[in-house]
Length: 423
Length: 190
Ligand code: SF4
Image (cartoon, rainbow over all chains, first blue to last red; front, side, top):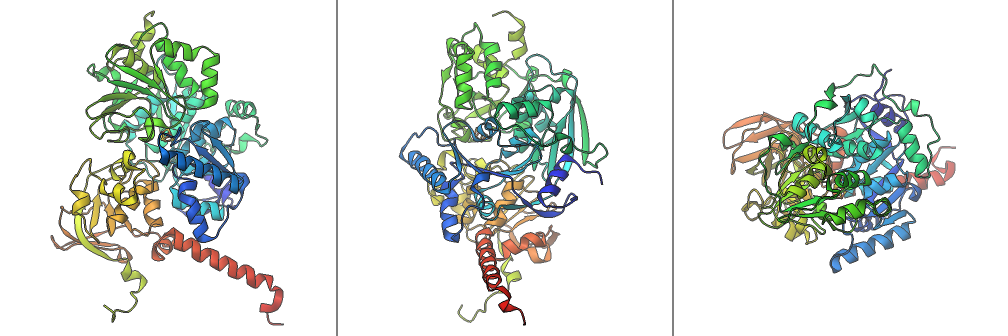
């Protein structure tokens, strides 16, 4: 029987030969990730109440990223509780080292064919490694921690192929904003599998943006089947994959709900207007909206590759005097790499303000929030009303190229124009 | 009501209350705004949906029914989005469709979430939801609508009041079967 990648992984996790879309099944977990906001702080008392223990500490990773660094006594207490719980439970804890989805990949925890769960809506990020990773809330996480299992409805697969090559100044973020506008945000019970030449050409960081923002499509998950790049990234992370990735590919004739083909070469940079990623359209269709604050942050928008995109635009340029640019790198390791390769120097020379690593303003909890009436342009994944501070702020979304370009001009503009002119 | 017998599980899922009607894509940041996430559940709930309806939290009463459009609860995995509605006393949510994590979270809190694409209701209408019959009744307009029932595998979770009681029951059952297994063959006829 022909199966899609998602179906193969779920069937394997249910110890069955095959599964059909729409079936409700119970799958065994290879990995469980939770963070300081939805993790120990929410599950510790529930586990106690049940008198239950973690089913397998080896398969659990805890990441402190949402309340990082502590800005008040309460966040300090949350971080302390997270630390204590992780130590007692004997699980791996990434403590203030970066954003959960990013450190999970830096550590090589997600491997092809794995069935994983995360206590965060952007957990589909793990799909970049050819795994099935879904996001759930803290009560589901409690159940999964106790039983090592999770129920799910087998999703239908949607294949999205980006053929050709992306133009200069266009990135995975633009692809996802375009898809949010085109396919909408109500794609429940669907697993998105991304492919095509443009996706194959992407770095693992860029593939992760596709999978990450599958959450904005409302999908069960997003995934990119493993290839040589996946293997190289895992080897570099110190956890080489020992299996055969040929096993974790969709059968060519497997039934899908839909298969889309897009031409990557014709995609322009996309900007999402307030207050939804689905309000995206080409940057060329925007008036020059003034920006009070640019924000380059979040798992989807401040990885090393994102900082490189911003630096390409900012090199030899200055932030406009009537705006400000805040940058919160996605991990400590990436900050170090950006320092070593000269990227940080370019960013700070341009006048960017560097913030600590963590979810920051993306989660509406940390540094960089917006005031009433302010206009922002951000590399984060969603711009829902009130998410990044005041519900009267206007937040636009764009790629790191677009946010950097907006900060240089002080208004929303096409980054390709700046990339084409010498600074 | 001391004479009232223990309600049977099915009728316990029926809810009747006033409708509070919202549009498509009601997201978790509207339901549980980030800037108040550190506050108590009660304070957080008092800001529920205030960005689009400042009166909601004050006006909603125990048993009232929230009606939404497409992808109700889209956004983050924060359970506070469901918890805020539970704290405010909301009895059920009826929507055209639900965002996937929100749907899971609602069932995990024992809050019936029903998919009913055709429902016509206005704020204040007298609504009754009957998950066991797959029905939503608008008593104000006198019309009935079919709703998708909760799959039987998951109804079990809602029936016992959510995932926590369900887990407690499962752990107790597991412990019991482990104990009888430890007795060796003593349970078997010789
Ligand atoms: S950076 Fe934003 S999107 Fe990513 S995990 Fe943190 S809060 Fe979620």
